[in-house]
Image 1 (cartoon, rainbow, N blue to C red):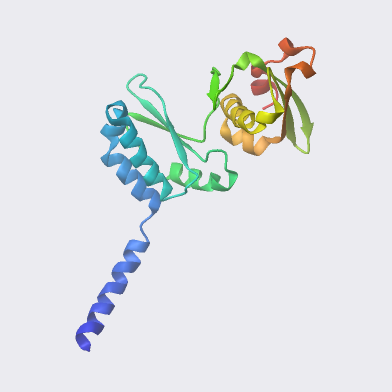
Image 2: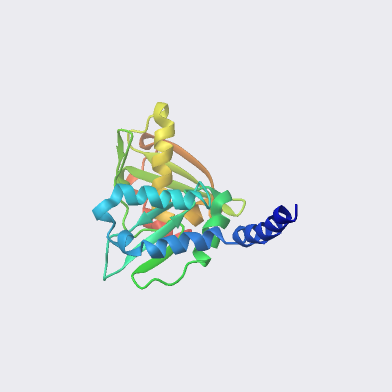
Length: 207
């Protein structure tokens, strides 16, 4: 009886110690151990990115990531909530827990990009010059209507995904979720001054 009682007493503190280990610290410990593999990810890209996703899922299943190419001896590692505002605190906590890595720039949320690229999703390709917009202030946010060349209402869900990718690139993930209100999509046939709309105007004059 005493033997088993002693074992129980010893096990309980161990459980308490392990339960206090931060999942964010565990992630960065794993990142640090695999830092060289990640920096040279092209050598085993699919396997390594699957491993990375498993580690992020332990924190929040909505978390995703992006890597830049190597520039000036560094890579950028972007932690994103994939547009899910409820997971923004998880991104903030993971970012704040990040140690300093000599070869890495750690970024929270998908940032604005200086250049927008073509998006090809589920057989539909849209280029930046095929998308115009109208901005309307509403309740301290900006409602956006996007006019897309060849837009088809029957493919609304596909175009919706493309639009969010464009907006994330143009405005940044955080601003899309916190400063943008309603988002609507229409055909470019619905406006006359298609060429007068500018993504740069959206980025710098309104946000």
